[in-house]
Image 1 (cartoon, rainbow, N blue to C red):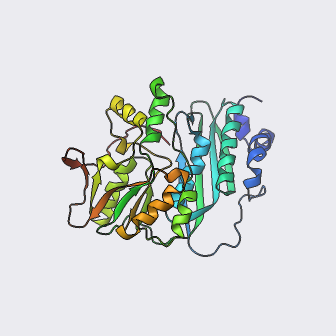
Image 2: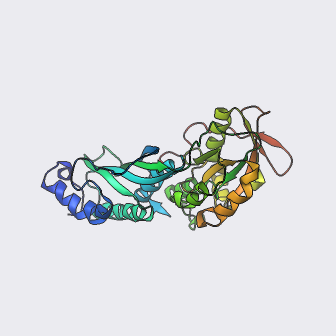
Image 3: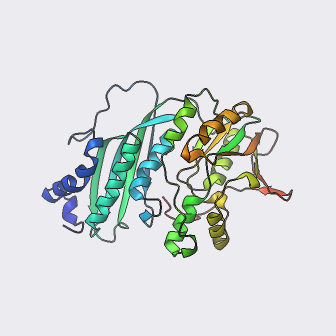
Length: 333
């Protein structure tokens, strides 16, 4: 058995063989459903957050990760951005006929590694095989579910004087995808920042620090996050360009693309809006975690400004950092 065939999606013996030899082989320790049509989560009480997303990235393997890792990190991060501890997931696989079995197993093993890293359990999973040409190799849908441990995070909560913090270097994932597709050898060391963020944020959530808004800067990058916040909270946001952490490799890719790193996707970076009084403690906590070692303040919130993001450069001039328009790079996640 080397390639996926339509029979693997028929529900018959081939489907069972695929489930047993690939999916259960790696995911069984994380599955709650025990072969039933749905899994049961017991002992749930309180407030919960849930997020679902579909992952269609091309290429499906890349430096720093693959679609399996991304599908776990992406959905668990969306839940974490609402102040929740990711606990359970579901997963749906749409696989093209002819897809290599060993490639599939590698992606499933990658998912299992991330599930273990995040202490996540699968409540439900599904596999569909479609005829060649109906889908580009493999798509994965995941839904994450978790208990809220930090309440009332919202894009509508920004307040005058809040400081805007980014947890790490921006634009890395989007730049990496471009390089993978175009085989730019000059930046062969560039890797995706794909990672689960709850481990970095958990200490922050229970520290007593006041957080008004939190968002992972995925598609549209920090430009999308900041413009959404400015409009939702009816505030202006001043950003210092020289304060934004960007890898030199990313700057180089952006010169080739003619793009700004602020609009490129990240998969392991979040943006926080925090009152001035809690900035020092927030940075101390973020810096203590490997994913937050480059965290820094990049700007400030003002209520007496238009609902815009204003980017100040080191030469004393300023301009609007606009909401991204169009598809900057398709199929980045």
